[in-house]
Image 1: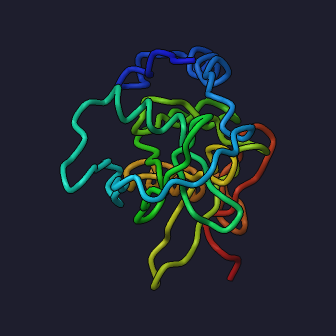
Image 2: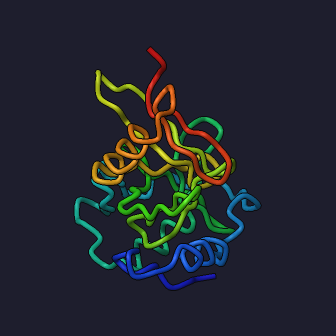
Length: 185
């Protein structure tokens, strides 16, 4: 089930390699597991993407990757860590993932997440931008209701693309799908 994380810099990979990594990601079938609820995990994911347990930051990236692979969003909006025998709530301040790097090539936008995973924006992984108190809040659907907030540097790259491509409203394309980055005036 586990796979190697992407390197910390996508510039050294071809877009084909990033897309292959995204396709090869194997996750546990958490959608099939419905164990009884057992309370709270005493874990939280903070808005900076860091994972905490009982007030201490989880420093081991491999452990964060493991927990992120069993994360699920329930229909009622709660986040849970789920195994075949146990389901525990986890607090999430903003989004469970951060999109920390963007690789753009032609009509494809690929993101590296803070967990080392790859997500290619497209019909199955849309980008949307919410307005939060007058500030843009860009997010990327990762899987099954789990989203990644697009980091500031990557969002600025997207905004630059949107301004130079002349679209109205300003937006970007990936895998044949247009994603507006702001409302039309």
